[in-house]
Image (cartoon, rainbow, N blue to C red; front, side):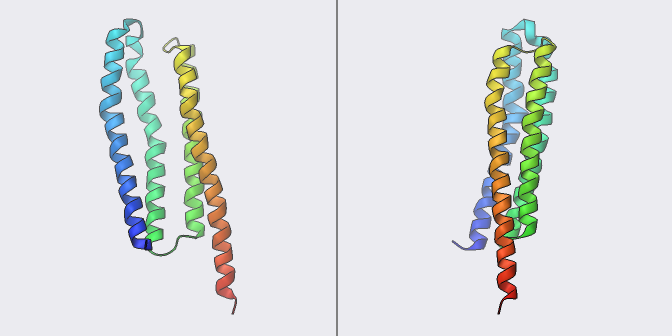
Length: 159
C-alpha cells in the first residue's frame, strides 16, 4: 500500500467518523433525549442542559479529527515520521483527556443538581475510560513518532 492510498483510506475513515458523529449528535441524541423526557417527566427539565453538555463534548472530538486530517495529509506527502505529526498526536492526547475530564465533571455536576441518576454517572465512566484509553494511545504514538523522526533525521545526516 502506498503512502497516498493509505492517506486516502485514512481520510475516508475520518470523514466517515465525522458523518457518524454528526448523525449521533444532531439527530439521535435529541431524538432519544425527547423520548426519555416523555417517558420520565421528572427529568424533562434536564433535557436542554444535557443536550448542551453533549454538544459541547463534540467540540474536542471534531478538533481531534482535524488533527487526524492534518496527519493524513503529511502521510500523503511521505512525511509520516515528523515532529509535526508527533505534535498533532500530542494535541489529540490532550483533547481526549480534556473531553474525558469534561464528561466526568459534567456528569457529576448534573448528579449534584439532581438532573441525573447515579447509574448515568456509572455508565459514563466507560466513556471516560475510552477517552483516557485514546489519550494514552495517542501519547504513546506521539512518543514513537517523535523517536522515529529523530532517528530519521540522524540517518539523513550520516554519510
